[in-house]
Image 1: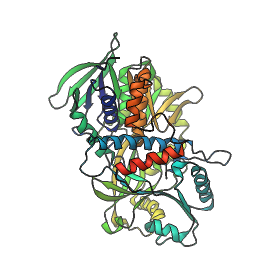
Image 2: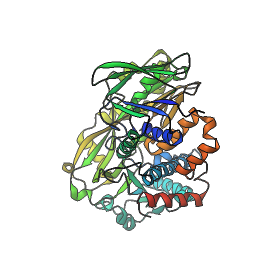
Image 3: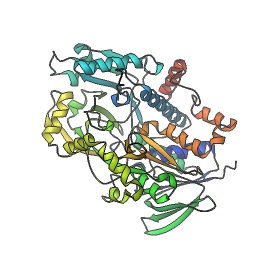
Image 4: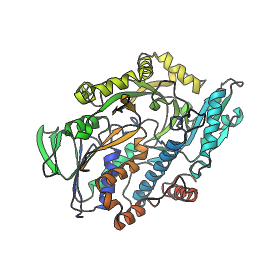
Length: 493
């Protein structure tokens, strides 16, 4: 196969940056054009403040380990996400070693990942989850405690002022991290800008895209700086535009887009403004989501390192806007409704009445009601130490379903055409953390034969040493891989 392939990547976030880097490593002669509507790289869902709560590795997020009907805990999703995060770390370590990922401050930092619950039923769930996960090397270092004294040593802010008779339990993973995906994105885009055949164009809005009879893709773009239009041609198109991806998928008119819709949910957080309080907490502590709430609403008291500065956030609180992007239009949701997705969207709404009620309740919350949720995790909190901030906009997938009419899906999904020359990424969490695995899936879609060729496999195993092997089943490989990346990324062993 000739390496002189051309690619149009829409959106300058973590996904396009990752795909662009992988393409250049595997196909040095490839021509890549990256188009971003905003005047800054990684400013939507990849931005650290919009991606509040990052570092998803399934160590502490309880929504990745749901209860089964038989009373056991399903850990399959947690294992997959954790493996995919280790794969992401391998690419970042490779780029750092090769001096291809430079940031002004560390983009990944050590931070303990913990789960914290109270009440007999929840404690029983947490213990079952712990017992299931520690069977795997990936989670073998997890600690479990029901001791007030021990948990207070781990997370004093959460335990100080708590009723000593309240039954509580916590798990702890010392190898957790906090990740600034905005910094990683900007670092990778900076590197791509130095590569031959790559052009990154900010302030460029994609108006339309379609496939020509010869199989090539035409993309119509407006330069927002000069208000001029142009049309470009490429062999492949990837749409990684966050919430804006659905509208571009609909414009492509590929048959595979039929039946897809989107439901936007915005996130808000309480941000601590008291430096003394911020210094008392050093962990990502996740609880359990309320019944009927979306998985992305799992409450957490979260230490973040943002461009070298330590912050403390609590949330999320759900909000609602018809925008598909934080910098989007209020017409995004109405414009996304077409004949092919009206019924899936209505059906999904009917089947998710509890979610609708939850969102309405969240939107009309008073500051005092929001503060009550914080008190459950931080009993001695003072309302004057916290301010409400708005994080990013997420668009959850609504998909046509033969039985239910339409289902609301959480997570991410790649939609591609039958010719395998276009790929559109829909959905939300835990996207950024698993971006490398997702982009490897896009490459598998575009180049199934090449991905199994000797030359590509050899290069992929240089970039990602565990490529093609299971970190879930091979405990020794998992721990060896983690030890290596820990050293390169300058994390604590």
